[in-house]
Length: 130
Image 1 (cartoon, rainbow, N blue to C red):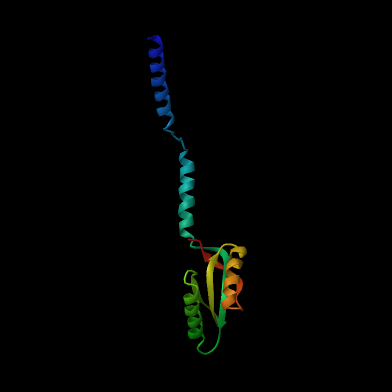
Image 2: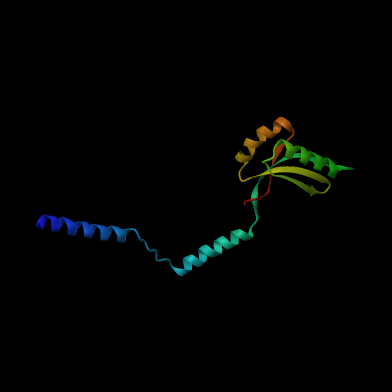
């Protein structure tokens, strides 16, 4: 009988100690929480960072905007999952594609894009990080 009571009491004690281990409480300094919140809110304000894009075309002169829009539309038909941008930097309308954080990421897609646009190349640009 003593053995059964001992085993029963050990089981109760183990279950109590195990249930106490399931709840963890973190004591975080308020200053650390404020720094973390400030960090998150500041990054939400920043929309673009230094990165890379692939330039597939650049046009200047008469009808250059319509040529660039046509190139962009044909690119969107060939690569629907890659974002494209029409950029005006006097005197050129440029068609750039992708949002790459490293040159290596851009190079991977460049190989596929150059099959359709042989003169495409990687350019540094501000890219959206979201």
